[in-house]
Amino acid sequence: MPQIPSVEGWVLYDGDCAFCVRWMHFWAPILRHRGFAVEPLQADWIPDAMKIPREEILRDIRLLTASGTSYSGADVYLFAAKKIWWAWPFGILFSLPGFNSLLWTGYRWFAAKRHCISGYCARRL
Image (cartoon, rainbow, N blue to C red; front, top):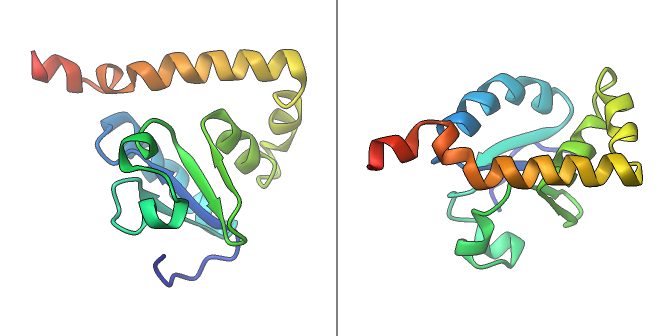
């Protein structure tokens, strides 16, 4: 794990996804202000720190707290939202059972298509 000034932890995103990179540039200052470092999932230290095979790591956005707790997928957004004063109500709302399953359904759909949404799959054809 790199030695960086992070009180809360690390938000880890797919550095090969143009959409993800673009949105992390927007969110990074907000997250850093709340004690989170932002790193691509492709960073060399991540498989060892998370104890997850590299192929599995790239499937979802991830959050690793300074205490070693990890979150993935939609739970990353919920965890982060609860740390941002203006997003906190959304974090609470989407933690409720019906809303949570809706959030996860939307997240799974987007995660499976994120490279096509960012235009990567069109370039591969």
